[in-house]
Amino acid sequence: MTANNIESSSYIFQDIFENNWNETVNTFDDMNLHENLLRGIYGYGFEKPSMLEKLAIKPCIAGRDMFAQAYSGSGKTSSYVISVLQRIDPEIKDCQALILAPTRELAQSINYVISSVGQYMNITCHACTGGTHIHSDIERFEKGVQIVTGTPGRVTDVINRSKLRIDHVKMLVLEEADEILDHGFEEQISGIVDKLPSSTQIVVFSASLPAELDKITAKVMKDPVKILLKSNNLTLEPIRQFYVNVEREHQHLSQQERDVIVQQFQTGSSQVLITVDLFARSINHQVNLYINYDLPNSMDNYIHRIGHSGAYGRKATAITLITKEDQGMLRSIEKYYDTHIEELPADIANLI
Image 1 (tube, rainbow, N blue to C red):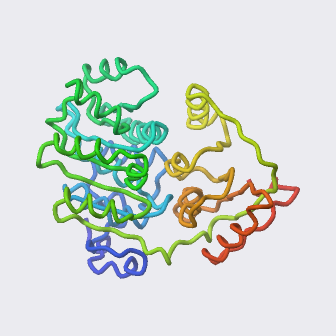
Image 2: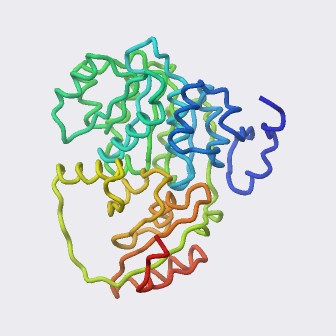
């Protein structure tokens, strides 16, 4: 690693992140990653680290507890996926990393990224979520799974049944920790943490920082690295934004139908996916078009929804469906982000 690729002062990041970690690594090649992990990183389409990845991956690999607050598209998922894959010992077949997410769709999406980036590393991973028969999880664990991504309820269940061994877990990741709390999983998280080895590294990624989350992390984390995104530096500059006037209607899908749709989108057989806030946060940076079915209830959630489409400065398009009752909220979002959202033109061929 050369001195030119390490910036101790990190002056270019101080205007973006409020943090207590100042060392950055500017390329994946200079992160001392396993050769087959680098192969998977570049094969997945990552070209160079995002701002967050330059800051977060090194201390995460070093075993430091970490709290990172950043918007969608900033490299949250890839930061901990790369770190987890780097820390796994391929000779130990038991679970070494546990990643918890608030919904099954998000957990499955994370597992897909792990499988893709780690495809050359001979490492096993599994999504342990509700909506499937628990015996399928148990069968996988009996064969040996080194990285488990799951929802707190199902993971708690298999641990309590002594079907998932966690005595070799060296790393616990809480993804979208604010949403985990909103879903009422605080008790399950506390129960899981209490059963883990005391030496377990705890890494928390969250789009927002509610007071409840701050209190919980203060109890379980040891001298954590903190990387906090300043809200006044959120930008939508690389994303072209439009709205479409629509009539209000609903359609409820079964879990089986949702699973099929997600699979089609991940494999590329489906080009456009309209989904809920939380799964939208997890979609990878290669997506260049987002469609908001409706406006979010929170101003901050607007960029968390569409941020992935403009990740790494890539040009992208976001289209929001609105009713006449939404006009006021739309203007408020424009003012909040100092941006302009124009009505979608009739000819959209050149936009997507």
